Length: 152
Ligand code: CTP
Ligand code: ZN
Image 1: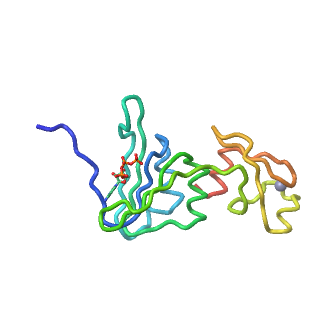
Image 2 (image 1 turned 45 degrees about the vertical axis):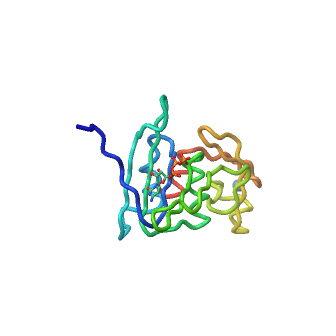
Image 3 (image 1 turned 120 degrees about the vertical axis):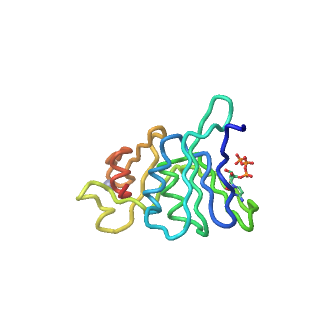
């Protein structure tokens, strides 16, 4: 007997692949997939190469917005977004955390000018784990706070 059950392919939708192990549930929460009406498959700690594992999230019949992709970049950089149409991968995109992040998050400093202007800008200070620095007031934002602000 073959002691392996492969996660099945999807017909149409999005596969977020190569998610850093342990981050799949954060991606699920970020995209609010608990309340999604179609199928969602989550695979955790799947072997991806001899010494590496990964998480995968497959969402049937859904495409991601640019904002959602940028939010995923904050919690699971290095993952890959695959668009599936009629069982074929028609688009593959590696998600990179950019050097500068505009919008998405609000600065934690209540007196920050960006709060009055309503437009934020952060410099990526550190990548693993992520630390952002507000471009306007220099206030640092760490991963825990980023997750909270993304409502994860
Ligand atoms: N996939 C899927 N349903 C399909 C096609 C692909 O769920 N109809 C999934 C695959 O299981 C894989 C991801 O989408 O997790 C990317 O598919 P593919 O590009 O075929 O795999 P790889 O070549 O292994 O991708 P990579 O090079 O990015 O590792
Ligand atoms: Zn600020």
